[in-house]
Length: 333
Image: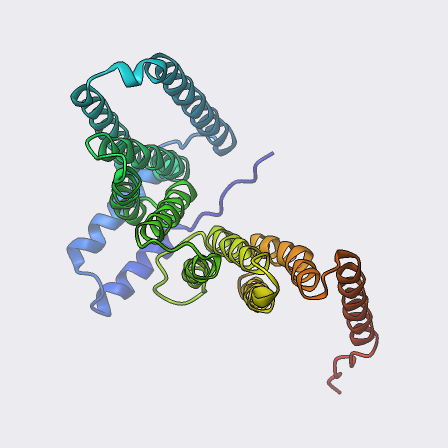
């Protein structure tokens, strides 16, 4: 059973409005308009909150399922014959899909259907925006030559995803921006002729660090999903550290340092934000990177396993000792 939302008496509202007018915050005309709107809202009988929320969720789920089935059906028709279409037709189809998906995202975002549907509309708009980014990437890749397809697609996806996220804050668009940025870095390194794993690992470590910075709980941070940002950044750093670590004994220590830095950063962000996704890359790094690095250094996975296990036992003992010997809180007399 849903409890009724708390209400404020109109007399209290009028007193508050009068105080705002006397303080110069509102004019008399503005206060009268607010008073009339609130009075009209109290006369109208609102829908039952529980039933309305359930209806909104059902409509949202139906929208996702219906949209997925439409896209799946269209893909099953177009994808098998995609290469047989002329380039102009493929480009036009991708552009039309981009416009329709972006238009749907904007319609879901700015539709006037009540504040109680805002959350569902924002989620739907973000999902449609992510699909529009993918369609824009396809449109940009069609006229490009084979050697420029990835660069054109990743840039087009970013061009759609970043402004889209500014309008519609949502996880799908944020994940799309991360994927496009990772592909863009890969294409740049490949074009530069970089073959060694170490510069690739350092480049992706920088990418991961940038995404983790977007999870910092600071004023003005444009990211509203810090848990996803730290998860993506931490996983990027984990991949970079593991790649550098497996590049040989000479770089094992560098990979270990990168991994430990990302693990420490993930734990620090977890303590600052209490977002559990921050623990996922930290645990993966602690589970894999030290063992891989020591195996490279000691030339033995068995010795590395024993070493990592001993370090883990020592950390567990230290944590238990700290818990047992913590000082009780001081009592106030």
